[in-house]
Length: 181
Image 1 (cartoon, rainbow, N blue to C red):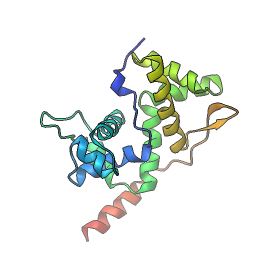
Image 2: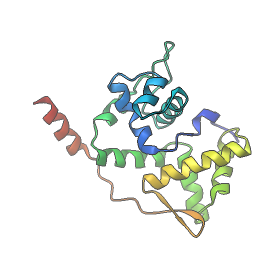
Image 3: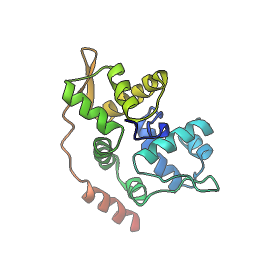
Image 4: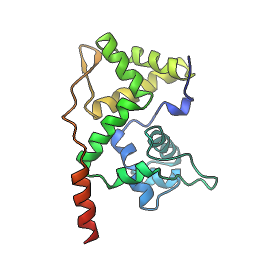
């Protein structure tokens, strides 16, 4: 049963570029084209993909009528985190948000899945063509690996224990206090 729109299945391959979208917006790069340029030689189309991916994670909202991409309150806070706190936050978001939540569940239930298995999960979530689902399966796998939640073993993506989680709030507070001085 499809519950998501096709745009809710990310196609922005580099998770850390998605994580930089709130930073781009805080620095005044608020359109898809400007976000793409901020992320490094990426055009309007890639800026759109990365902004959509940040929206899926709850870091930004839907574009405004004038084409600007607004930050969510969480996205504004996320942009202030240090890299360690962002890593922790990304792992939590990937475990909680679709489509990665369902992919992780399938990995755990089946003891690992290949790209076709990931594509099948994505096709159950959104009305994707088979070829599109296979391409986006690569994105989902890349995100889970980048976050330290999964790894390839014997041709299957398997769950791995993520580094110990800590809130990171003390780090964020110190960083914000230092900036105020």
